[in-house]
Image (cartoon, rainbow, N blue to C red; front, side):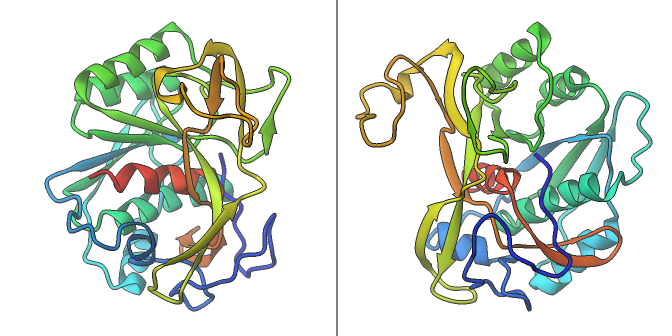
Length: 283
């Protein structure tokens, strides 16, 4: 889903405590690792991350500025242009999404060999290229998009090749009554929801976390419950014991410092963010 971007923070669906290291209290750079992976020594070295992007590129200067403000070494960014797309930054919402995708990936995995940014217009062509390249073992998408049999084949190919694909659960709250759009209940990919994080202070450890009220989630009307969700007591969380539940995992989705739109800075969020962090923490 598209991020909610605020050049000057003015509140959102939740009220974060602004405990990050950025000048406006947003989470930036090592804040994510300090909160979620404080004892992890792996940095993504030798690995690539692949990002699914729709109809928008990014400003390289934005990524460089983010790295400078976060005190990070530059990570190579490799655009792959598909469907005749020229790589130009899209409207402000799409550009914010792409920038946030890249920036949070490198924040969690600052030693990555590269971030491959697949930019296209047709979902199946992007998914197919990610699979046929088979370079990045960590893949993700921030978008809701139409899927078909070819999409399903790509998801299964990812799994067969050891590629993990993460998709944000959407930012519209609970999906109910069969309203969950594709691919948010697909059993071949990992769906990631959102929370609101509080840390002990800038660069500090995890201190608390609550559900982000905008986080997409719900019970699938298309798929039965997968094996990894079976045997769980659903009486408290309201989940189903017979149908697929989403999301699978969740972490912070608010108070995220971003550099985008050719030099604009601010706070943003959404389930797109924690889907990226959930992916790269596995490197």
